[in-house]
Image (cartoon, rainbow over all chains, first blue to last red; front, side, top):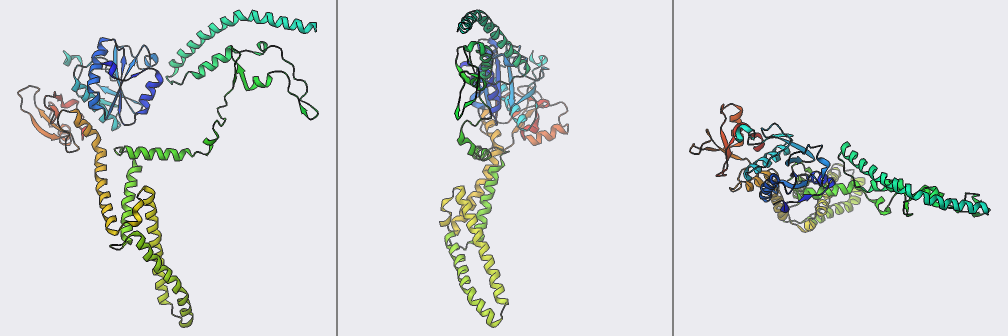
Length: 142
Length: 345
């Protein structure tokens, strides 16, 4: 589904996407279109796009094409999803220990919607860290 | 002559010699460039266009004085009244440079005025306009106060006009009424002056002058209000009767309420769309909960976010409960410990 979502092809575009959005949360998936994890995540992201379009903008970034952020955001995983609001990175407590990003593929649409909604609500109330509704730590995952 | 030719030959020979190292230097330049790029991203991720980079590298590999060939040295600036331009490129080299291909580039002066018409542009005004437009478009913006102020103004203006108008009267008629009585009083002024002189009666004239003062104030206020409304885009205001303005005021006040509500509503309505159920009527998200995360467990609720927040804060659920938004059938339940109900109220 990655071809249905807008791609950002250079660092400038990524910066502008984050900067220009004033009212919505910007969700960026860093990874590769051909990566199976990304494919799964893109599928979920594509499905929610229409439903959350009022408060979320979703973009895809190929980390090989645009390596500018790899070091800064530590993009070493096959698939990384990060949240930004008004040029600020919004952290999210997922229970995994890494509050900066989602670095696996979700498998439930509603979970993703709930996460971005929480991010939006928290961010628009000035929070820099929000708590995801679901705990994704391993003890609940298995 | 001989020395000149020699010089020329030397030049040619030098140019040939130069050719090979020049290529090398280009290569090194290229590696240097990529290195520079890398390091730039390492330092910060500011992502300017690459144009500047290119100019730098071209400049480095550009022609220098030697490559420009035979040049005359500057001799005298002028011969009598005639200004002499020396046959060399010194002046040009000051203002710009040649790239490796011999193309001349003028140095761009960042402070130079590129477009003269831009001088007259008031950027503050443009910014103001932009904000106003944005405010008009996104009435949902809570931070946008300009829009709200404008609405408030409109209501205040209508009320002010209504205070001055009489029922059934238009603004034009009111102005005529106030203005005519004023002009009459102006013509009377002479009479009164005479009267005053002859009779020495002061109290009545004082009173009428106070009236006149008030009338003039009313005229000023009325024209001011009407002007403001016309500026906003209400062009028919002068022809509007008392009743019509009253109706407009009523409509404006009505319109104001939904606008305010709407601003808070945006997240919740958009949220309503996300959940499979219909958008909730109230601003607040409603929740339902069950004590255990099991299918046959009884579902309680719905309760408002404020209620849920209160309960969680007062340790009403020491064990935590499993919650989900009301009207979202089949959605999964989340632990109340991870939900910040404050965000949803």
